[in-house]
Length: 66
Image (cartoon, rainbow, N blue to C red; front, side):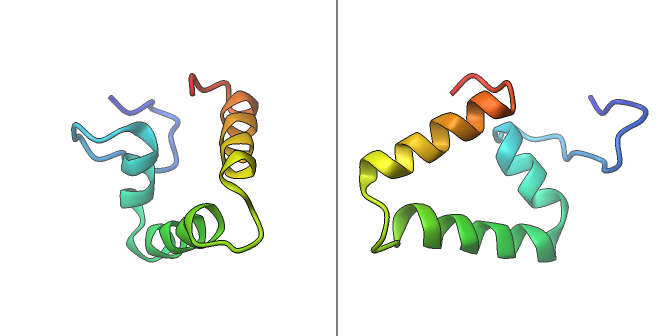
């Protein structure tokens, strides 16, 4: 269900909230997915532990249960 004051219409799907948000805007979603993949999974600069810390801190900042 979309809040009446929402800026976007969230697709109704079984995907998680982040996947639904990314799929809302094709152009932005594609770029965001590429950025996440590059930083979190293909980066030579961040260790797996550092990637998990980024994910955990981001989830907490968004009041998300990670």
